Image (cartoon, rainbow, N blue to C red; front, side):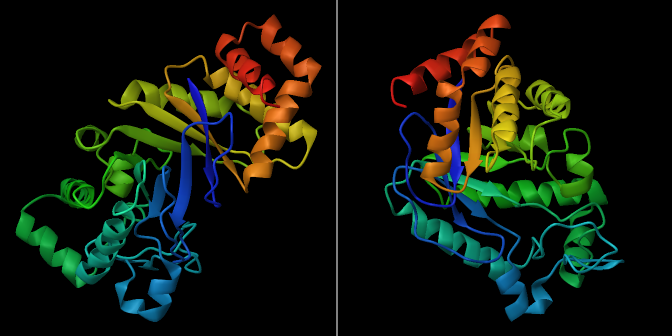
Length: 294
């Protein structure tokens, strides 16, 4: 198992691999590609674009796909996934970063907002013409988008998975089997303010490893300000290292944040004794490699 980083700053940190850089954010900010890194691109969540043109937002009977719409429990503002001009804008951006020397591209939030979206006139007409039912049409729409998006990228191609291993197709149009034909791996973010309670992480990892037909990379939040939270994070990484996952990615603010976590693991004798006592061989190997650096 590898251990890498997801970061908002385009800087590599020794002792971590792979490196994933957020190059397009949910608020609409876009940045130049980070060379030799996996560039993570937010697709259909773009608060800036929706402010500039509210007509592009995804719709449901309960209203638009906006965070302020309290009838829906959405974390972000969603553009309709069939909007042709916005899709072209995304493809143009993918073309621009793929001209650089990048490791590859990861797409996130490339799907419908939830199970009751989208019923805009364009989506309604496209579904009627398809002859497919609601679930099949939405899944086909997302899969075909990803097929086209891939032609605008180079290097490793991956997608982030909304962490629902059971109802992803019905809720978001995410067809695991169809998408597996397109990607090199699945990126599963299991975000939390802390991992003081961590059994749920183990459960999700087990479910995704059993379900997905390509390698699985798990992302954990690592912006940990206290020793207690950092200890819980590292123990969570140790537990999931026993599963057949390709890598764990730690979401950090910057390089110093990442180094702080590695140094904690190396210098905390109680944690290292815990690894040895319970025979976490993969995690112990990672900490040993960090000890040569930190």
